[in-house]
Image 1: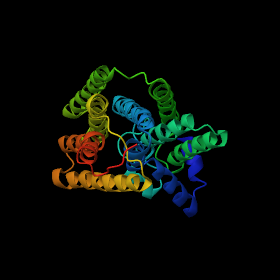
Image 2: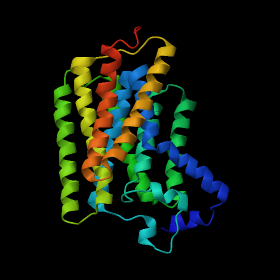
Image 3: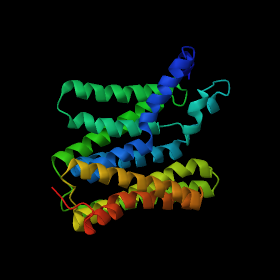
Length: 298
């Protein structure tokens, strides 16, 4: 807490705005949009590496959140004040940092992928800035950020090595599905049990349910695409852009529409995230592949 109080003494209006913009780089929809571009249009193998890193580290981080149940800094010390505009986006428990996990999965994957040393350094600078922004804004302690970074960079390194470089999962899709589904189901049971016994509230269980439902849907989508669908992207840049824009627009409509329709209960959160990820990985590729909306393929 002493480090956060030190940073708070250096806050300015310009700094608050700058680091609020920086922290937005780790928003889930930005990561999902990049995964969609890679998956539908550009580099499916890299998309799998990024997605596995994002979802597996997300499951670990959300599991740790409800296991340790460490409150946010302003709850630990009521006299401490976070930047007001950052508080609404700081959902769930404090430890570990979800934003740090998200940005590390994204730019950590790119850091392993790019060959240029300057580009690698820039990737880690972005990770550092987002992690620092969470502390500057008063949403996380250094421990929250460091642990999230370590967990995620390890997941990212393993995913990139075994999925992108070695294609270790080829022929093991059923095993991957079984393992991922088991982890997701156990995490859902754990979160619901804690919620039912009033150890945690529905608000704190929600992020965990979202991560588990998204992970479960991704594992199903991975299995179906790798064993049955195996779609190809359009070859022309125009078709790629059309494919991406239309698909992302429909994804947002579905995700936001389901929230409006179903509400914010744990069950509705599960359905919303599960269906959204399954739409991205299976339903939309089936539509543009089977119905030949994009005739030219690579």
